Image (cartoon, rainbow, N blue to C red; front, side, top):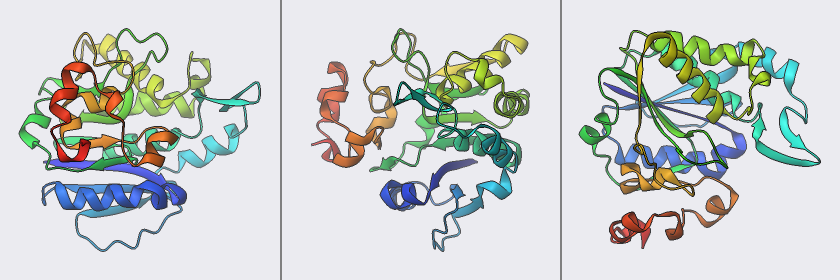
Length: 267
């Protein structure tokens, strides 16, 4: 069994979250539920596949974390400009939501998907499940050899809920925030904290994880759409892609572009 989760605030729900959920309901199998961790949002949706959570009720630790740490510097502001790599606030909601769902889920596989994604085709479920081998505790979109962004792309993460180390992973991931250890890291963006928690579990237990981009990666520009995910889903990361309503053809590596441009969505 698979569960999906995502997070958003009111502005995000209106700008992209509503589209994400509606397209999920159209294209994903009818037996897969999506859990919405909402920041002061009432979606008004009435569908048995949609499960809404008030993130502050489900993750009460988040309020204390925000009360203690929500300032310009921890929002990534450096020399008057925001740098997302140092933002410990904006992306913390998705971390707390993932850690809560990992502990509460009764599914075999849990998939976190950013709310600024669009499902435009039917997901090949059997192939998706192959991205997370049974002996791996998580699967992710890596950015190997990327010196500018030396961390995962966390718009899509898979968790093996049956893995013996998955609860410990969730505890380690959340503790980076609640303990304040996040501020000792090189970067505070959730991409880096996810990698940090993942590596701790790998080193402690010899646990395995899967970078779905492979050892050489799938480009520095937009690895998400260059994976199999790009055959049925798009990630509108960044303001430019959100404004345009989809990613760019230039985001594809040459070996992928020829195939993708044959799909109606990418034309």
